Length: 417
Image (tube, one colour):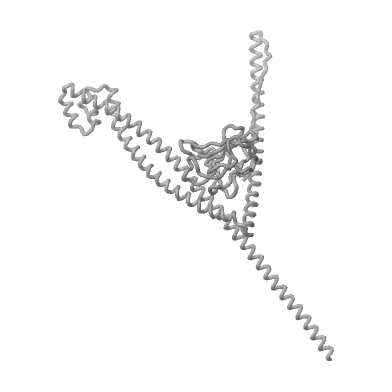
């Protein structure tokens, strides 16, 4: 009986230990799962914050670009208004001089009725358009003088419009200052994220880079499909053009043969047809190095209005002042200072293309005209010199295939940055 009781007690002890171990294991697993879930939640929150910062800067840049576009449009409108006001005032002065000459002629002619009419008139326009002077004005002069009132009214209207534009311009200038301040604040926050080295920040950046790579792949596939469709369309167009050219050549040959028979001439003629050439480049240079380090933001503003009725011929890459700027390809540098671009440089690539960087804060210490660089070399720093003075810091980047006219660099920047 004692042995049985002892065995049962031992069995109970073993079962108790097993249950305790299972409970401890379960608790440990629960704690581990909670820690994992907490870490995943922290990582998700960090990434959401990181993306929110990116979007916030992008929105700020978009607002700044919109204000710039409005400002440039308004500047052009004001210039045209001022020009029209000056021209109309000059015309009004000529008409007024003619009116004065006519009034003087009436006075010298001794016609009292004309003189009284002139003295009683409220304005010189009333004098020259009054019936009292009709007898002394020929039809051509009178038609010109009648325009004086209309021209004067137009000058007044344009002057009012110009005054309203000046008020609007002051408002835009104030909005631009605020927009730049907003960009600087959110860029500073984003820069802190890029400079953080903790696990959450590193994971967020890694996730973001993967997302950017996914977008680049999607864009590359879309571009490839577009190129294929374009090539197919060009091939069809070329084939149709070739068919029409052959048909036209046959028609001409037949016409020439008949004409030669009539004139006893040799009907043999050669028809030289040159096939149209298709585009040999889709405008995207994926072998280039991104011209700026992180953080950076850019939008497609190709063709946007600029001062002097110009249009934007590049892409503005926004970053905090002093951000590194790199050579996109092997080549030779030519620096320049002044003008709209402020501190700028040309990179004449060994690929045959030319690349223009403007509004730079400074060049790298070892960069000057004639310096040879490799792709990825540090060549300058982001700023806001030239006509970007007072605005948000950015690099104006242009791409000139073959050194010729610029093309939109945005698709290339999307592919390489």
